[in-house]
Length: 341
Image (cartoon, rainbow, N blue to C red):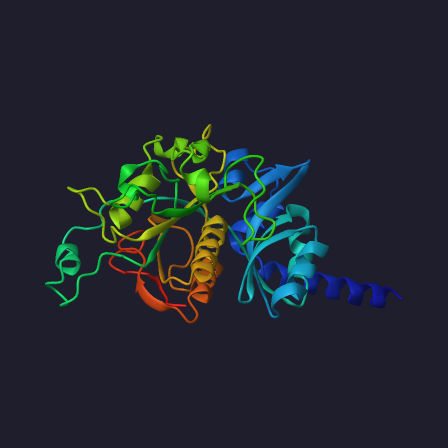
């Protein structure tokens, strides 16, 4: 009989070891050491909800869609975006290893802290010659196109985001960080507030200003959106006649510790934001280009992290254009997005 117990123990040990290999090292360390400093935990998307420590994660499954959702929900998790075979979700920290042991789970990746890295954008790009048509024979101004910006927010009332008649060019704005909101229809289990229609012009969206404490409250998202689509007569944006969909990302509350000024948001929040923008573009039947002036030194940077895979999956059937330049990637340029529906 003792041999049977030994065999059972070995099997259980092997299963636990196999499950551990399906959890990324950063998350595995957090699971094994739940007493890590609070700010370290928050920087990687771990927060306590109703007394339960939950981790914000990417989960890659062998299956797709609702079957995967049920597995996560069975582990006490809440699924937001489903992108191909990858989910963004919040899962109780105590259930991560149990979830990883499920045969349908390929890998669980911790969200990564990201920060703003918009150092320069337009220098030596030849934008002027594209706008006046001298470079291509056709003038491109962004008319008929959507520009998506996932960043620290946007100043809805700024004149640079209005057309020649003074009408707003911002068509939708999702503040993921807004407390008490009902989220957005495009992303299940989402939180925050969405502003469309009159809410963009009657002052309501002033409830979601472009001010993040970790960025000094200087309005990085408005700055970036201005480069991409602002209509200032002196500092004209690249697509100055485009409509705009903006997302204000979630900022982890870690300003009192060593991560102050470092972790601006989480990689899972970025994927949710891009997913929302694509769905808006589809509903409006417009091509879209998305800007992410943000980066991290953590993770693979070679296309193999679930963060990168999720962005790639969102690009299926989309034409490709530039996403960023020199944001935690040296001379490499990751790519995204324009598509006609």
